[in-house]
Length: 260
Image 1 (cartoon, rainbow, N blue to C red):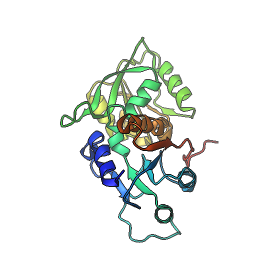
Image 2: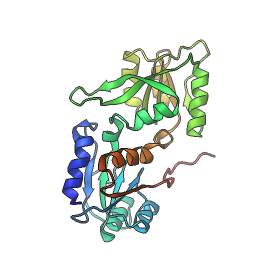
Image 3: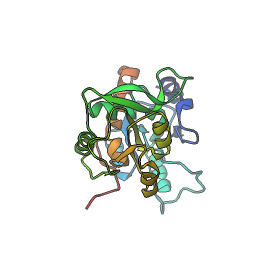
């Protein structure tokens, strides 16, 4: 398939305008005119590229951007330069979906919500220009849920330590905001929409202070919330491309954070 035709198909389903302002999404590296074999990954490191090479992939679709700041040079002594050169050397193009998959109708936040056994109520931040699209979700439990129950569900699902506010079992847990990844900037919107809890990552000490008495924060970590993304992208693209290309996805753990 011609790479420009491939891009048109992708961007019809995942419009670039649905990305968060300033995000780096779309075709980041073009190494050839054709796409035959796609490998999907959460993000790039050497192992992910080696896996793509072993699978004869000529395109990687990644969630996290490789190139975020303008490239001033491509050198082996930094991660972005080294990986960019490795992609070019091996004829592998790179397409980034990041927040256009976050806002997708079957995207990052919906996947995490379903894995927790919650039900969709509404988008946290709606995008009226796009049908059934938004950043973050507001979810509800199928049955009455205490905050401690939700904390335990999240801890079990994410298999990691987590941070949360002090709470007691009288704290309501009816409206649950979910913003996977780094979503502390959406806490005020969750409060404004009368959410009892927000589940999101990368929350700082002072964010917990700001939220005290207003909303319960559950922070299980960044990649821990986005663990379902590669398989989710694979499912969406398989439906979209209908066997026109060979598509696989990586199960490699690229999380640089370990817990001791």
